[in-house]
Length: 424
Image 1 (cartoon, rainbow, N blue to C red):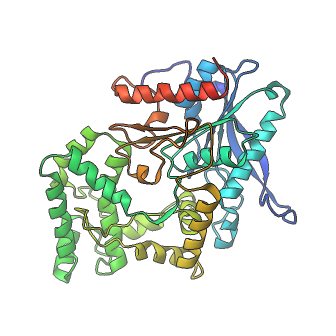
Image 2 (tube, rainbow, N blue to C red; image 1 turned 60 degrees about the vertical axis):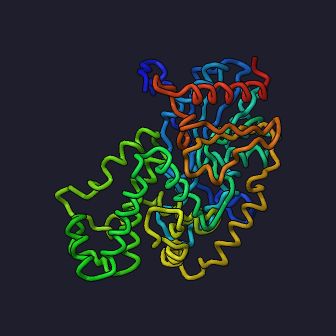
């Protein structure tokens, strides 16, 4: 990342709070809660647009107002920058505990209504009466950006939906299929076979008590962790899949190539043994909130059972559906998951949302692109697919090593937004 002594100065950014209705759709529910957001106004000039970077499934950071695509757009068009925090994440928690019953207000529609209320509050300020509104997001928050333009077209003038998996899907088997393809395409010539041999070894060792003991010793897994239980084996295998997924989702083809040179050395070399009970059960409230969203509306369950994979075949859909019931109760069954996913896709249109003035972007090595829009919907809903680029990379600051394709993608995004808000 290039140095930025002035633009990265946080003195320009203010943390704000706004009271939101707990339930925007039930007038009998009177409870309210405080939502956090950040504000940067020093770049703004009268008539300049409002850029709202939408927070997703985690704590927000002011850095999106300091550098990256949102900052560059605001700088070039004299815009104000806002960053919103999603209900139930970060400091924006309606409740102080994670009681399952309290999660019922965690829905996509409630989150979108929060954004509508925030934007109307901002627009009420006399200085912003004539300002256009652009919403920006990446990954799940990219969905929210597109869906804000869909549900509130009179309020939101344009949107950037970066790396947005707009199709809710229960069995997201394409995720690891894409990871596998990336390793086959960018790895060493024998990389795919090396991965396959490694995971076949794991599967073989997990079939016997003697093999389990050997695996625990080789991988430095704590003696107390019962690796003969299927669910615990699946946790271990998902842990081992993490490095492959991370490289494909967030890194570059060269990182994938480098990883291929060290696959057989991918063991836990820390002095402290691995206890997956602590590793998984120590997950924070934000992670639990995201699991709830996947179990009720979005799916996105990364299964691994396909013969197209060099990985294990032991991560079926049932692993995730059982997790939903174990964490939230027996009523969170397949029917509830299916109904929630169907409702989301019907409401927002899946891969065919009826939107204009939304630009959809995806990196072509990003596993999430399988659920994203990769072809133009219309002249006013273009899709930009960026070669050899990963998840949300176009949202990040320009770097000296960026490819020309990535630079051109950012130029095109800016062109569309400035055109749609009539900024020249």
